[in-house]
Length: 545
Ligand code: FAD
Image 1 (cartoon, rainbow, N blue to C red):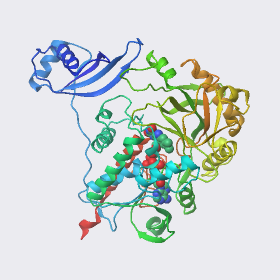
Image 2: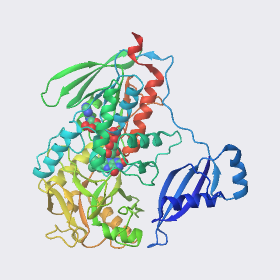
Image 3: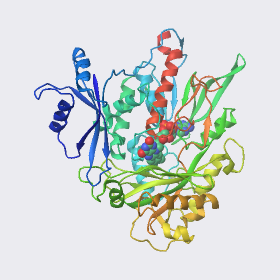
Image 4: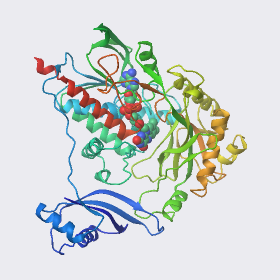
């Protein structure tokens, strides 16, 4: 196979233009049959408003001809490649499981872990405290309309996990040398995501499409012998001492609708809890699970007109056939803090993403079309255990809660909103300017700056001013700020060894909540890795019969 890099065409090109260009680059005759696959497509906006797609393309070439063509073309953008794809390891002589494996949490980490265990005959049981995605959707919409929060079925909890009501961005900084990241994209595409996620540079799904993908993956798990228990919360764990170490023995499950409890015997359980399972973190800590505080980041959501972002990125307000423009900005301040944009949602909405009563957190989402009026993004500042005011392993959770209580107070229960001009003057906003907030949930004009300790509040201001040098208008008087963006990643880590197991044997900490992922794709990849670790060590218990 020959890979062509840096193949550049105007954004209005046709498929025939692409094929013509491939033939030209490879010096092939006009009528040569082509078999090729686009591996990557990104946008070149260096000459904006003239915009180009830049492709990486794999072309299937007869092995005998490959060397000849490469020699003849002598082009640094051409290379011979061999693609190897990732495969799930099969355990041949491991221990037999005594029970079906259990996975707690149906976010991307738990969903992908369960999916692969089911596909490989392990008949996993997936436990989710929240509701199936169809009912969860109703609960979330009711919360945004009435302000009445269901603490077990919301933007953080329920089938599909935290990312279900999201922009569904799938890019990740995690290297994909083993092909798990590619596998995640293939599975998303197989279960309903658009095929373009397999090659575009910044793939995204969108809330509307993601809901279907999650439902389809659940059905595949059921068809392959898995089981899914909704509105069921793991509320306790029981262990026994074996050979000087602790071994997981059973879980206490509580039905979140009826309060009914039952014991589930288990020898292995994957903890794919997400970053918001604070009650579960507390329980695990009290049961002696090895937990430690870690750094994360907090800040605000900012909103700008999408047309302004398009103009700065593409050189035109309306990007024609391109989707709404995105951006990513970072700066290092003199006080040593890093400020950066995070989870940018082109044409999206700010959402009230709270999961605890009288505590308020925001985040961002968009639909697949990304056709909302505003662009939003978190602007966040790194915080470390030094900021938490204590060395307790759960001190980061206490720090998040304090900010979320302040946000709830500022907004009197609604999302607190302020213009950047008033934020700089440290005055509550009394009126909006030209930017109208696009928020799912009620909002209230107030003083967002009051949410933060002085240095963090100042760092947010300085960060936004620095970003204005990269995107003119970013620090405009009318830019909208809302808060608090506090669930950016987990405030703790649940320790595990190289085989993915906690010092308490049988427990597999996994995904974002345990501190091993940040975002949908990396959480899904960690879920796959955890399923692999289990499959390398154990044979399904059914086979022992
Ligand atoms: P989660 O998705 O948080 O899933 C954990 C699950 O565990 C939850 O469903 C929860 O209900 C369940 N659970 C917790 N405790 C228990 C218990 N005791 N018993 C039973 N079940 C339990 N990331 C991106 O990459 N791109 C984006 O565009 C993006 N946008 C986002 C937008 C929003 C509004 C939010 C909130 C997050 C967004 N994220 C995005 C982050 C992304 O959602 C997370 O990184 C990802 O979901 C983490 O996956 P996870 O499986 O580790 O945990």
